[in-house]
Image (cartoon, rainbow, N blue to C red; front, top):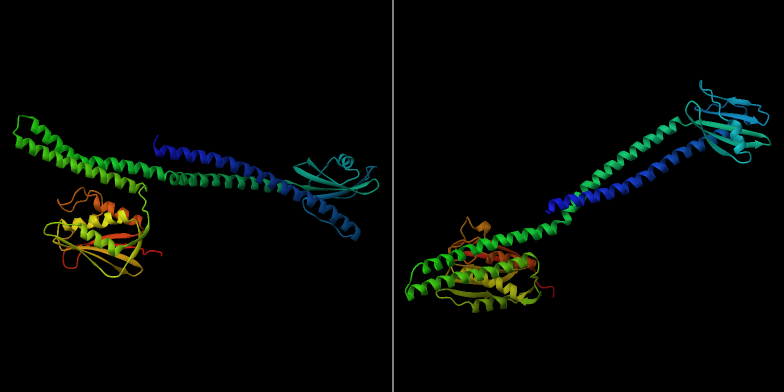
Length: 392
């Protein structure tokens, strides 16, 4: 199963769960909203009774659209009936009164549309009943239901899109791990192809017919050189894979950069090449001694393979500590310079696997630093490393 399918399945699962949650919330919103709308209708019916009582006491005419009131008694004597428009409403008034003989109550009934009636006892054997047309309230409730449903649908679509994005984010480590595994396999195949071809060709050519001792010795030398290169490449590939996976985390401790450069310069001895350190004040950075030494030594040996003079410098550069590795060789080819830290990028035939600069970049970045390559102002190559100073 590929990651795209997993992402789609996670999105569908998230969408279903979100849809259930939104549906429950929408149901509660519609229910509570409708209850609130019809409760306002009940309050309006109660207010009609109060307004009718005030109108009766003051003697003024009461006109409330979409409502009416009537006073009744047990002898079915109606008085002061107020109707509206041309609608003739005949609610079961005495049934209302019987169900609320001692207490006010609300009643729903149908008469040319939905109505709600409110009956309230006023004197012994007398009641007042009001009714309110619910058509407008029903329209409001339907409109509320439609708006909630549309909002719920939009929310589900938005959550589905968010789920797709979150699924992609959550699968990013797995995608990165698969990409690293794929890159490692491709890098290994790329780097081992040449030495294995040399071994196969040399062995096949040697075994094709009887050879002299010197010829066997030469063939074995070629095979030994190829196997040594293959072994070094495998070691560098494994180290680069550990750096990519974050498994080779630096063990940070205060480290004197000036002393480190002097140590590296003293350890490299090559014919016709001088490697020297030019340092001044003591510069201390939080770094892993073994990893940072590996970087400096890789850069110094690269320069020593191409130049007669290699200089290692350490100095302050603003709020950073700078290490420079400069040589008087031919410098970087302009076509290679933008890609000098890419894997298997060789500027000439003097390099080894083409992984040293890529490993150096990974190590420097794991220390919170930066590394850059350029050609010197006059000639030669210049590699610059900037590191944060020690916190102590």
